[in-house]
Image (tube, rainbow, N blue to C red; front, side, top):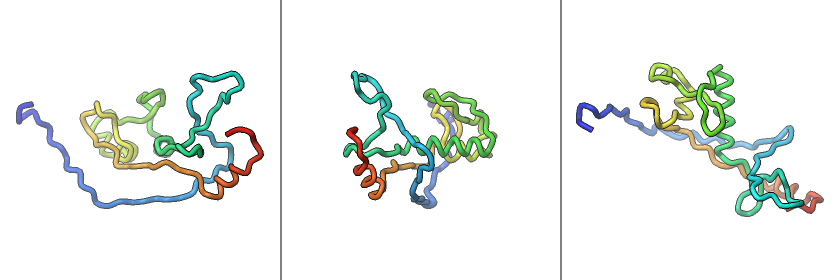
Amino acid sequence: MEENEVKKMDEIKLLGKVVIRGIIEAKTGLRIGGSTVGLDIGGVDNPVIKDAKGKPYIPGSSLKGKMRSLLEKAEGKPLNSNMGGTRIHVCENENEYQNCHVCKIFGVPGEKDFGRPTCLIVRDASLTEESAKWLRDLPTDLE
């Protein structure tokens, strides 16, 4: 690129961090599913995502997606883009982006020539010790 073609990049400066911690309490059934590829006779057809130790967990990406969809709904944003089979809101231009909490927090796709990457990191949610014990003590023959 020639010098006059180089786009001006806004400087991204870290002003601080906000850490939010909490406990998710499922009031109804909650399932984050895994793959059913290679289903055997008598096998489980609705597997649950588990960590390396075999404990169920909620991936940070699932939590982040739910947070995005709730904000899109709260702000009445149109779901105008298909990302991996899921409809999401993506601003169409710089002016729209400047006033959009969704895109500023969760980012816009890389092919857009405006916006910045997401500034939000969402970690996996693991079981509390109490929930893990409750699950271990269930009378079931499933692992």
